[in-house]
Length: 496
Image 1 (spheres, rainbow, N blue to C red):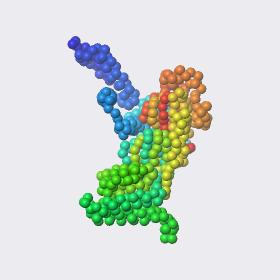
Image 2: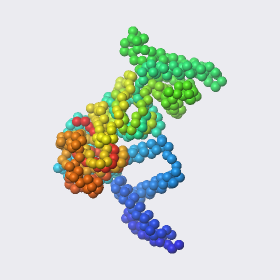
Image 3: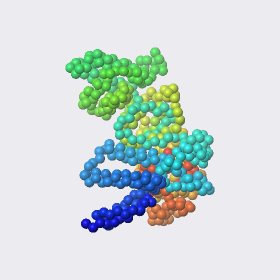
Image 4: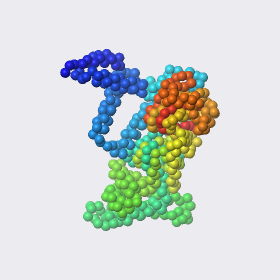
């Protein structure tokens, strides 16, 4: 076969190769490579040709691997698919959270440092906190700058492929958890009688289990476990039985006090061996027994963790649903993908954490997912510091305005973002909340031009900035934006 020469002039290098492949094929291949290089440069902001070439090669290998999987017809299981989505969003969020802000004010022309359209933080760019510290009033707004002196919230994307360890949120303020996919969490203590019911089941099962000593466990182990369960049940006795001794007696706190100090070697082996029996005898609580077994099989297992599914409520959230958590509520993420918005209270000492733990019966109400017909929805605010909103669109632009600083995370689709009119006006805020006034009049006059990305420019004629799935944007206080496209985005904003 005749040799065909291909001249490669990419990334500042120029050389020719000879190959047996057809000329048209080589041309298409080079064009694809150039296109991928351009995308990498645009999205990453990298300048080093070697780094660009390496990242381009990596992405092309990723395409090849995906194509190979699709060719074999292999199916991705639910957990793997969820993990992949989480990885995509998380990696993009980490690399883009420090996205460059838009203009500081309508009258101030941005410097070159802030006018780049690249979404990825490079080595030369400062972290978001450092950027804000350069001019707190400009980025945070006067009210937020004077009240907090920093961004007053933490906006976190999390993915739980496996059950997380139980934690207690120590901050003196509540937080909100919102599901992006079906999400399971343990949250808040059950009623004492419910917990006692599970302890009764375990005690009766342990008594039967250790009656036959052929399994190798000693009778002493069985007696130890039964004694532990009896003590826990006693601690959960009704409040009326304890009023004379201590009017402030809290059965859940007494239960947890025993549980945290509990050292019972027999508990792990008992749960491991009997979880299938418990699931068979009490199928209505199969989720609880499976989680107990999971925690029992962890290398760093602890007795409090094993009992957690029997003490805390199991909450199932659908995509878009959310829960507000009171201060100090015990909770754990079990499985799924979600967002967490919480106050940034800084360092909290162990003494402060202990004083803020919530040992009260608590089952959060599920906030229903907003209707897909709504282009803008703000979840009921659980805190004075922040508010969480979701916006989505597929037909027209959305006017975005917050008096305080905010972070917008795109979770689905693609969007074009442009600067809109003058900032720092109450009219922008009112217009966004009025669905009839939310659409920009100039864009509305020409829907065809609006759907052309070249027409998506700000008032100065500057092209809009593309925002892809997983990317985030920091929006300075009082900045008015237009979002175009078919997308879903969540916004965390400081309350003012």
